[in-house]
Image (cartoon, rainbow, N blue to C red):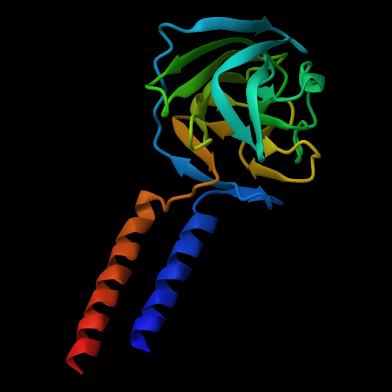
Length: 232
């Protein structure tokens, strides 16, 4: 009985840390989970220019690997100056800006906003574990806001990573997160000013490092309980 109780406590601990570690909110039923991750801006020294300018500027880019988004595989995407990528051609203009959830249909947004930016891209890593990295750098139209941030798509795991050196929104409301093609399923991060922060949207969630001590204590307790059961 004690062993079963410890199993229950462990499950509860994992659930609590997975759900409440960061201020993500959603109606997501597909299985994405939002967490923080280590701050780790990628090197863009060999990056290629994708698109630049003001509103409604977007360019179609071939992906170096197939990427699964809400259950559908894609080999290309539309990259917008306004801080998002879309998997549907109808999203190429990436109109701006409602800022409220859900975001643009069938898209990922690291900060859907009225930006004037330059977007570059680079692929890194070995086949099977590659990263496709997009970098936005620029300012907010008509205000003092600014952006220097990256969106990283991970091969195989299909994780979506956001890395923010700096993100300041001072004019419009802004959407950070992912939205399915029907705009009924989404995952949103609530925040308007980020500095040296990493975020992760994943369908294969692992407990954050901060939760691991509690998990370890629970596992130790389980081992002790088993030994006592054997001795009894």
